[in-house]
Amino acid sequence: MAGVLAVAWLLVMVTGSLAVAAPGRHSATAPNPATAPNNATAPIRAAFYYPWFPETEHWATRYAPDLGAYDSGAPAVLSAHVSAARYAGLNAFISSYWGRTSPTARRLPLLLDAARAQGFHVTAYYEPASNWTPPSSQVLRDDFAALAALSGHPGWLRMDGKPVLFVYNTGGEASCAAVSSLVAANAGRFYLNLKVFGGYLGCATQPDGWHQYGPATEYDQQGTYSATVSPGFFKFNEKAPRLTRNVGRFKSDLRRQVASSARWQLVTTFNEWGEGTAVESAQQWSSTSGRGAYLDALRTAYGGTG
Image 1 (cartoon, rainbow, N blue to C red):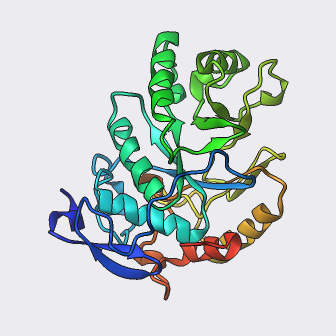
Image 2 (tube, rainbow, N blue to C red):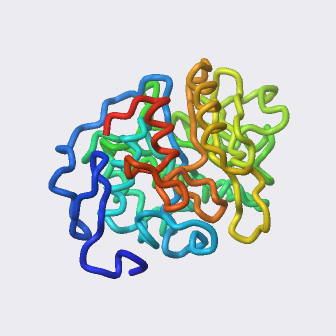
Image 3 (cartoon, helix red, strand yellow):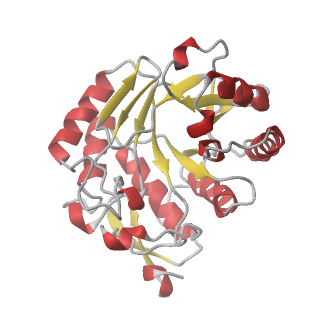
C-alpha cells in the first residue's frame, strides 16, 4: 500500500477540517447514508475522475497531493474524495472505466458506495472506445451489459429517467459510423453522452448528449450540451505546460461556465495527476480552508454543500 496508506491511519478531509479515519471505514463525522434521487437536475456539475492509483503514480514527478500517494481502492480515500467534491459543489464524478476486467471496473462499486454514503453521484467514463482499434460489437455489448447491471446502484447518476454513461470515443471511434455503433450497443439503456468530433452534429444518429474532453484548453463550450473548464495541463513527461495554471483565470472561466446555458458543466479533472489537470488539493496550491485553491474556487462558483 503506497504513501500515506502504508501507515495505520489516514488523514481524511471532512467538512473543511482534518479528521482521522481508519482505512476501510468512513469517518465518524461523515453524513448518514442517503438514497440517490432518480434524476439529476440541470445544470449537472461533474468532474472527470481517475481511480487508477497506485498503478499510475506520475504525480510523484510533478505535484504532491495532500493525501499522498494514495490507493484508489481504499474506502477512506474514496470517502475523502467525495467529501472534497461535495465541498466544491460538484454533483458527480465521471469515473474512468477501461472494461469489465480492469482495475477501474473493480473499484467502481467502491466509489458508488462512497458516493451513496454522502448523497453524491457517480457515472462511468467508458474509455476502450478511444483505441484506434475499437472494441468489437461483442465487447461493446458485454461491457455495456456489465455497466447496466451496476447502474441500478443508488449512487449511479441518472438523467431523464436513465442511468448516465459517458464515452471517450476518439481515434477510430470519432465518426458518425462509430456513433451509430455505440448507440446500437447501448440499446436505449443509458443516457449516452459522447465526446465531440468534427461534424458530430451532422450525424444521422444522435446520442443524448455531447461533451468535449480537451483539458489543455482552458474553456470549451458545445452549445447548450456542455461547458468544460480546466485548471491547467502539465504532463508528467513534458518539459513545459500546455496550459499554465492560474487560479484567477480558472475563477473567470468558472463564472463564464455558470453563466452559460449548458446542461453539463464539467471539470477536467478532479485527479488526473499524470497530465497535471487535477483540482484535488495539493501542496502546490494549498489554501487556508485546507481544501486547496481550486476546490475553493469551485465552491465559490457552484455553492458547495460539504
